Length: 123
Image (cartoon, rainbow, N blue to C red; front, side, top):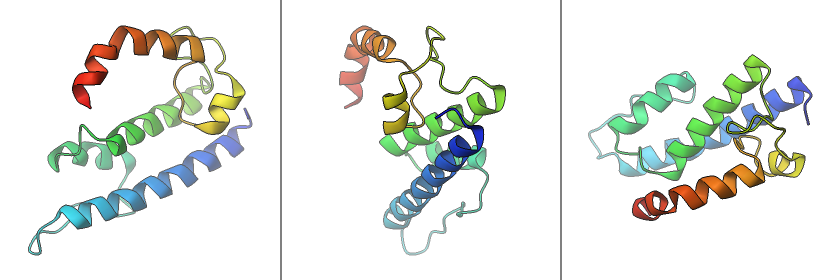
């Protein structure tokens, strides 16, 4: 799974899916007279900056875009597949299931335990 081109392709496919999902969400939320200020070609960083403006900051789609951006950055830095907390390899099945995964199983469990109160408040 650590072939850079394969990873890049998987991330690009995921980005396309997320962009389509976002365009549908925005289309559904806009009033008839409003216009979306992003398109399928808008750079990722501008898409992420736009989401809080349309009140999508506390949504799954915002989280997915943030994880996608982090995965692109990690790939560029040669750190893709390393846990953001302990810097050990993330288990391959986790990356196959979610190419934007940021933590190994142990660190994810620890994160969820430590932040469960915050996570409950957000949902």
